Each structure stands twice: as C-alpha cells, then as structure tokens.
Length: 188
Image (tube, rainbow, N blue to C red; front, side, top):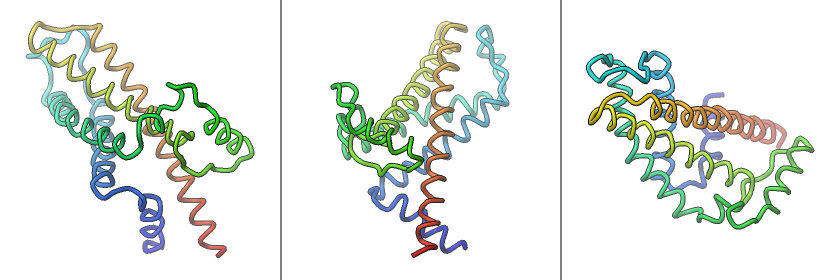
C-alpha cells in the first residue's frame, strides 16, 4: 500500500519540474506551520512589540522568510503556466472554466488544463499566499517602526482566511484526485 501511495503521489506531481515540486512541498509545510502556530498566538491590534511572545516571534520571523520563498514559488509557477492560464477571467475567458464546472456538476473531476478551473484556483491560491505573507510582513514592519496597528492586523487576519480556505480546498481536491487515481489503477 505504501508503495502504491508513492506511485500515486508521483503521478499527481509528476508533471511539475523538480524545483517547483520542492518549492510546492516547502510552501505546503511552511503554510501549515504558520496556520498551526497562528492558532496559538495571542497578538491583538494594540499589542506592543515588547509584549509579543516567543512563539509569536517564531511565527512572525517564519512568515518573513516565507515571503521570498513564496515570491520565488509564484514566479516559477507563472513562468511555467503563463498569466492567462492562471487568471483567464482577467481577459474575460470563461469557456474552459465553464466546461470544468459542468464536469463537476456531473460529479466528474475535470482534467487540469490551461485556463481551466484547476489552473484558475491555483492562480487564486498564489494570490492568497502572496497576500497573506505581504500583509503579515507589512503589519510587522509597522509594529516594529511605529507601533501597533489594529487595522493592519485585521487585514492580515482576513487575508489569512483566504489562504486557509485555499489550503484545505486544495488538499481536498488533491485527495480526490489521488482517490480517483487509486480506483482507476485498481481496476486496470
């Protein structure tokens, strides 16, 4: 079973270039660490820098390091996928998304393709990731230079909601594709 699972994961990620695959897993575990550590933090909009706990600083500094990693990851994905594939709605191209949505309504997982639902969701995930790390970095730099900002912390927490939704939704669809692959490989 373990060997088959490895084959399934290799099948799911086999089309990605190695560097992108490594960055994907690094970002995945890093974001998970950030989400878990954020639940243990007690930082509020009026919390002064000297009142921030060590755990919160680990979260903050980890997020600051995640910023350049996220930018590199986003750049690699965009170089491979193209802007119009990840964000077809920017130019009013909805046809492939519509076809993929129709597949989902028939309870069929659509194949990943340029300008499709999977690519569009990947593009939104990249935006959510960048938004979360940028807003967190801006909040920290503001607290560090001029003091607490309830407004910036609220924006960061809101932006993290988008990455949470994406993270769990992305994981769910990855599992669904893995289950689909497993079932198809068991019948052939």
